Length: 149
Image (tube, rainbow, N blue to C red; front, side):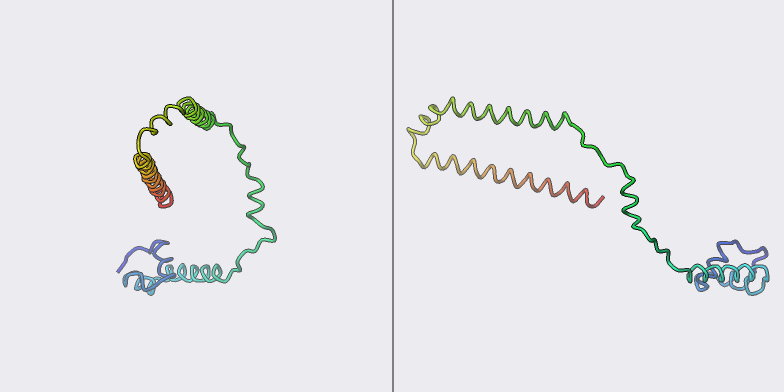
């Protein structure tokens, strides 16, 4: 038998689910008048909380909160600007080289058969497809890792 009184947590647990408590706790509450009064107080309190109506707002809370949040301002990013700049410079350089070396490329493949040219194009295209697939797989892995965490 428990000599001292039960803690508030033990009494609350007994009131909410008597089967989860030990037999010593149940026996103590049955024999101790002070703990019985506390248990009855918690029963009344818990039933009052359960019967309390759910609060209903007469306004849209999410709209009210969202209207008070500060909207993020678009920032100018030097990093993105540099990526665009290097992309434009790279594409321009490739186009200029193709224009300057146009005669060389035509004479390069002029002496060879059409089969060699198509073989070169197929190998380049296949390589690009496999690289694209690999980039997409890496992208999907990163997105899945973000979704999990």
